[in-house]
Length: 322
Ligand SMILES: [Zn+2]
Image 1 (tube, rainbow, N blue to C red):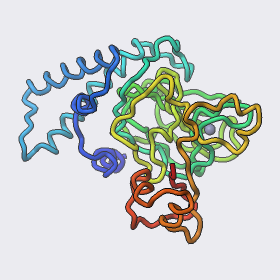
Image 2 (cartoon, helix red, strand yellow):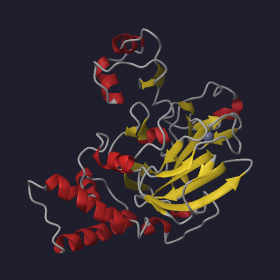
Image 3 (cartoon, rainbow, N blue to C red):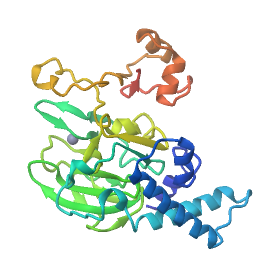
């Protein structure tokens, strides 16, 4: 656990740690009223902390930023994005909110993300047979440790025989909620506060599942978001420090499934769903060859996948080509 906690603070994924409002300001995004409320609350916490002599000298900048961030995170855990959830704390349902309250846009700090478990995707977010698949399935072995994706608090800890099996829903101070399905057992209790990277359960095959895997969801006030919009599954890091949620487009991006030509799936086809495309790396592939075949350049592939042109390609992994 200590190893993972350290990982969440120090890993290359995280980049430079800056307090949330600084990065949000730099972003220059038009924030909603809700977001403004969150930011002013954040600023108050920051100034209180600075008044308490949390000093940032040039030499100690990195260390002090980490301490400041830890203090902010602790403070945030008392609020858990109340500006979005209005202090509601339903311990029964994944989706327990009115769509009316979903903001048009909301900037989410995902810099503290830790991958719940590193594994290959076995099923993508999007239309699947007759049901919509609201998460990404990740291959696990039964008993593998599943980690919290962010700091947060356990909102739901339940069993659903025909669905999620044993599952957890965590709420996070950044506004997101994450869902972990088909677990074989729990390592946390309802209402427990957890750190990013802390073990929360063991992977399994419970509920509607045909083999051990983790069903992993991101939601904001109940609206699902394709995890591949937030996570880069090549290096299991967040794609960016900030994710800008958009009510009308978030969750609408997904790969066109092979059955999307059939009429039952076509109703799910959303604008922009063909913007993201992946290619599964085969024996003997090189970046140059993949780029040529898909009418793109090695530079573009490197940028899209955050890799170097010298990165060794692993057979079976997926690489984003568009
Ligand atoms: Zn699933």
